[in-house]
Length: 117
Image 1 (cartoon, rainbow, N blue to C red):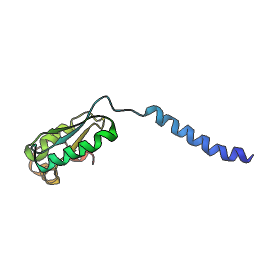
Image 2 (tube, one colour):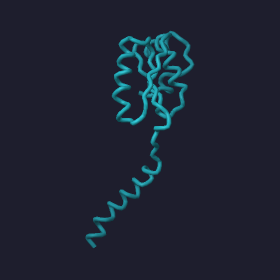
Image 3 (cartoon, rainbow, N blue to C red):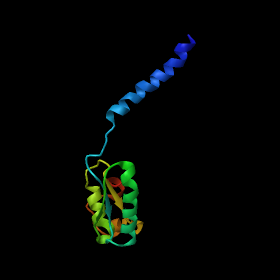
């Protein structure tokens, strides 16, 4: 009787966790892209390349840094917003461009809905 009481929560936990293993994806089929809204060689670019060097071994896949300077980071943000929503495209940009641009420019994306922190 006591054995069943102890075993029931363990079995329930395994039944809940089993589908999570089945739905997990490796994600190693395409590289992770870090979109940078600044020119190569600047502080943001150097930070992105340092992050890429740290991410690649733990993710066990390549991490690419793509520089898309111009329009206060909105070119890189637009490319990130319109990328496939699979989590393989990241944006590294300054907060000033992202905070001011929606008030001054007509954007092709909604920064609050299309981008997630």
